[in-house]
Image (tube, rainbow, N blue to C red):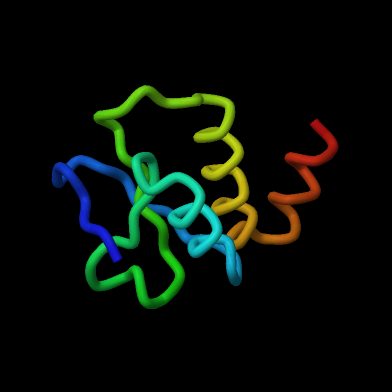
Length: 78
């Protein structure tokens, strides 16, 4: 388990197993945040060279976990 480098690092909800995969594969970019980490949330380090396409994919995946069906349908049809 790692901790954020700054208090400004965002955290997002992640699907089952996804947090472990991200943190294990890229610990310089992702971390298990305190308090919410045990519930599957993953932190994104902003003080490193970021792949913004990857960040967008992680954020969209997190949004899809909590979005309503109508919002998902609206997004997918856009």
